[in-house]
Length: 412
Length: 114
Image 1: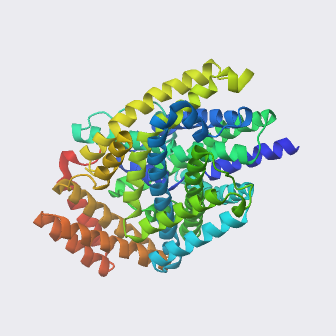
Image 2 (image 1 turned 45 degrees about the horizontal axis):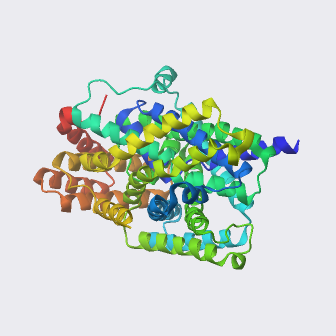
Image 3 (image 1 turned 90 degrees about the vertical axis):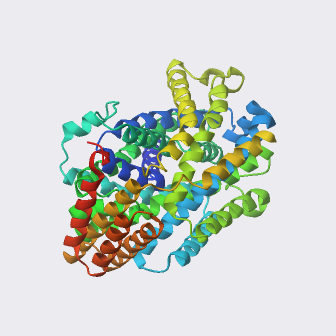
């Protein structure tokens, strides 16, 4: 019974914590711009994050190693240090985008000044991390984020053409697009892969496994959470895309702000729908802010071998504590410069994809190393999916910057 | 160390952002903000969204339209952006919809994918 509850909570937390500001923005824009044609990219990337998430959780349970320990061991200082620098920059920018998004949603709910809400929400997040143990932090934001299910309910209410939706799951490039739009399509595909497979998700997930002292008996929960939980979470992102294709596309709206996405639920359900959508977005985005802030501190502390973890009191891991406090301070500083959250989302998406191959290579190597993993090394399926996605990520990493410039960040 | 410096330089280059938008990009932006504002005002009139949401979304649409009007080199985009701002101020969804439709037609074959 206890195991079933644990699995259910794990799945619910994974579902509620799946969508963040980048998925929200890119799913809505993808639906509005290309109809259902990019659904398959969400589905495809979800297989990738489920595979790497499972692997990182398994390594945490068996080898007791978090991602950045592995990175230093396997890549050495030569590649490990640049990866640490870039991923810390990426995480901080992503954290800024999430704080900006949180403030924007609160601004839509209260009308208070954006800058004041950015400061207040950062303070609240810092207090929450300081006071709550890891499990509570993960579970509370994940479970509250389940309010995002209202987007899926809206999809059902909007009665889409389900055959057309199903056809969207088949890999495709829309026919008859001019070359310029084909390039934009490619940019969106790369951006969605990056948004779904953000590196901070693996840092946070595997560090969480160690925080919660996972053991081999937890491998089942790990497998179900990453496959079922991430899979259902991805359906929420796909629901946002479908709603945008049905509601925004015919009206010539390319939603540029998180606030526009809330209209997807307001249109079928009125004010109640709007408030539910905004609350769901608030919990999902602020949960992602917590994850990105902590991920930076996890990465730095693990790389340098410092004491780390929220299972310790803040003064028992002082450098870890300073690292996550500094990340939130830097992220808030970025938000207060007045850079729009959407720009931050775009930068974090493009930077992330560049870091992804370096993040996942050590995972693949350790997951195949019997010395660390014993009988729990990768099987043929994990290796097949893992290396296929690795090749995709390398190609996407090479293409990301040229596509970003060629499409003016997808706006061309 | 050289690798780190190269990566940071690449990131700094990226942070400068892509080259300035062309006219088509500006047309798309004004079209979308006008259509978005039209929908928000329409739903506000039907009491389907909160008053605070309406005020914030209208402010954001106005601000984005003003930014586009200031940064564009295209006189016709400037004209449409100003008309859209006036329509937002006047709570006039019909005019906003007309502007969005005209701009969508102007995008022509380079409009959105079908």
